[in-house]
Amino acid sequence: MNVCIIGNGISTLILATVLANRGIRVLICEENSPKKKLTTRTLGISKGNFNFLIKEKINLKKNSWAINKIKIFNEAENDKEILNFGSNKDKIFYIIKFEDLIKLLSTNTKKNKLIKKIKIKNSSFYNSILTKKINYDLIFNFNEKNKISKNFFSKRIEKDYNSIAFTSLIDHFPCNNYTAQQIFTKFGPLAFLPCSNNKTSVVFSVFDQKTIITDNKIKKLILNYNKKYKIKSFSKFEKFKLKSSILKNYYYKNILCFGDNLHKIHPLAGQGFNMTIRDIKILLNLIDYKI
Image 1 (cartoon, rainbow, N blue to C red):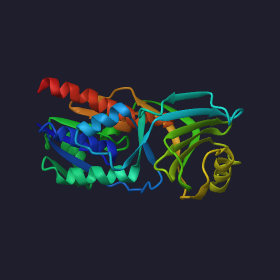
Image 2 (image 1 turned 180 degrees about the vertical axis):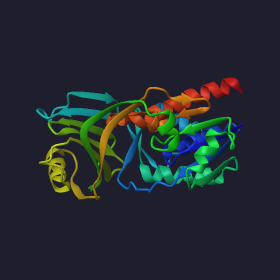
Image 3 (image 1 turned 90 degrees about the vertical axis):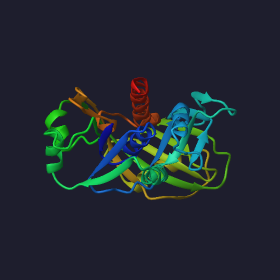
């Protein structure tokens, strides 16, 4: 069986790895989009998905940090938790840096003889796919802006959250750092996601109010809401607009849309990435049954 995956990124590399684990030949076709380094982004992976990736020989243990509790606060009672999940005895999810996961997956795919990579240089590649001059049993399309998506997957349900997510890594004095915190502020949800005993990822999804959208103002707000860490420094802030997008039709002949191209939602509680892992698991159940 020959499979073609169109796109760049973490979900692309995970899908290629798990397919190759089943003896399926995979060609990753990387589109020539500018690669933006995401040095402060982190991903939350649920316990079930983490164990699934370990089982699929994607060893995240060295690069990830286990979280055993989540505490929820609101604006009015910042010192008093309104909800909590988990216990001190069990792990409920894991945090890994975006950059570290990309490096790990890239190394794995380079070593795998069933996985090859090429660069898509122009639109003739898409023409060859559509006219079946290049023939694959199955094509996964991760990109919502390429020619295939524009021709066959243009109908979407879209929502603009009117919010901007700010991400940063804070350096702080060492502490017992196994509890994630979520504070629902009047500006939007603010999450503190531990990465180690002295580093924590901060994700602040701010409603698009022009009066506060600057790095310095965001930093002041984080310092104001922070009740746990003795902060030494912030890394540079990265930001991106928050939108949701769901395709009305997700396949055309042997082309299947996947990842953010299929469904993109608010990153609250790491839902988006974990949904894609769930989709991969469902797909593999079908493939394993057919095999």
